[in-house]
Structure formats: structure tokens, C-alpha cells
Length: 309
Image (tube, rainbow, N blue to C red):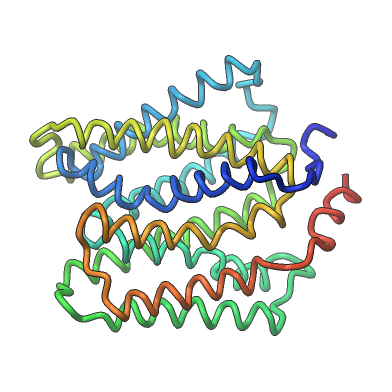
């Protein structure tokens, strides 16, 4: 079990640069999702991206001699996680087909606040404190500013925002379930089997719901799918996990606030989305909420994990 214990090494400039790169990859993914849909229907793009991601993770797992087989009794838990992941990713892709990348990126980053609320009710001892309450209020004030932005906002855009929020809620439920019920798993199993079980369902959705499964295929739209599959899911997941094991969760999550920043800036610079003062205020409040919740003294978060192990 010691291989899973964070070593809490000091944060070097090189490690910090890697973390910033990964946060940019995660943040800019909302823009890349939009680009992938220039040539493919939303569910078609999701299905192809999932196949690419599954191949990337399998190659990595085989190359690093990771066990692929589940242990006895783990399959029902994986099925539940796969179901949540299926709903989550479906909501994201159909949501991003309707809303702006910058708005969607901001909404995706309210996930920590949903987790805090759910943890209060479902995880013993994980109570909402004054500090957490402040973080949650900041986060949802940010969401309020997103919905107050009426400039050029259509009913489709609002529907897209709501679908992404549903996806974020599924993501938070997934995280709580993993914390409560998932033990002795290889972490990549949760992603790999979710992809494996989700691909047929995504493909069926594409066939039924995409009015145009494949449109004008361009270098940009195809590259976007490979970026999402290999860079975001493959490299991003593996690198994030590896760095977490090296420096611990507290230090790593101090950089999480960069994800919505990169998402909003990417939407404005790459797609030319409007960067209005309400979107900027939403960004400020969501980032402030994340920082209030995540930035803490290198206290007991990792040391408690060490003691438990």
C-alpha cells in the first residue's frame, strides 16, 4: 500500500510548471469540446473521444504493467460509477453544444462546492465550517452572475448551462460515492471501465439523437478528439495522479483555481466568446470560492491519510 502514499516532496519549479500545464489542459478542454463539434455531432464526438481515451489508457496500463482485471465483488460498484459517468459526460457534451465554452467551464468548476454540500450529509465528520460556507457562497454567487448575463443569451444557451450543472452534480455524487464505497481499486480502473461500458451507450445515443453524426471533417475537429482522448483523459489523468502521489493533495489542489481561469481565457481568445464584466465577476467569485476552500495550511490533510495507511 505504500505506493499510494503521497511522499509530500517539496514543490519544485519544474513540478509547479507541470501542474500549471495540466490545469491549462483541463481548463481548455471546454474549448476543445466545442471545436470537436464543428465536425461531429455531440454524442458522436463523445463516443469517438471515449474510444481514443480508452486505447490511450490501455496502452499506458499495459506498458506500465498495471493489472487490468477487477477483483471479486468490484463490478457492481464500477457499474454504478459508469452509470454516473455516462450521465455526466452526456450532459457535458450536449450542454456544450448549446452554451459557450467559457460559461460551461465556469459551471464545471462549481463541482467542489457540490461536494462540500454532499459531504456534510453523507460523510461522517466532514461538516460544513464557516470557511467552507464562505467558499460555497462565493462559488454560487459566481453562478448567479453567469445567469445574470443576458447579452446575446438565448434559451438554448440557458438549457446548455442547466445540462452542464446536472453533469457537475453527477460528478460530485460520483466523487462522494468513490470516497465512501470504493476501496482497494486501481484508480485508473474507474476511468477505464467507465469508458469501456459507456462507449456502446454513447454510440447508441449518437445514432438516435445526433441529427448529424458526421459533418464537415476538418483537421481541427479531428485533432480536438485526439486532444480530448489522449491529452486530457490519458496524459492529464496519469500526470495528475502521479504528481498527487509525489507532493500530496493539499499542495496540488492549491492550483485548482487556474482551471476556470484558463477555460474563460481560452473561450475568449480561441473562440472569440464575449468576455463581459458579469462573466469576469463570475470568474472572480468562483476562483475566490475555490481558493477559500482549497488553500490551507499543509496541515492534517495528507498526514491524516498517512496515519490511516
